[in-house]
Length: 36
Image (tube, rainbow, N blue to C red; front, top):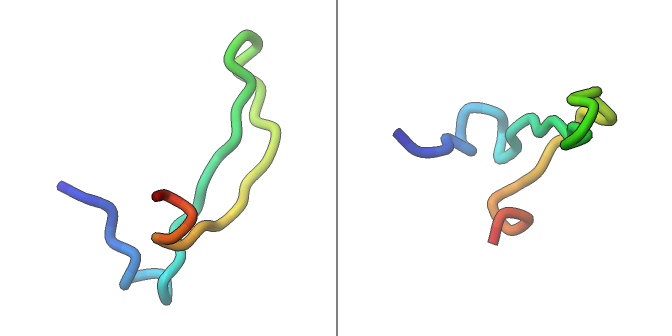
C-alpha cells in the first residue's frame, strides 16, 4: 500500500511530532515533490 496523492487533489496530510515528548507540533499538507 502506497501513498495516494490523487485522493486529496495532489496533497496528503502530514503530522510533525516531537520525537521525545510525542507532542504534535503541526499539521500540514505535502505533495509528491516534497517527499522526494
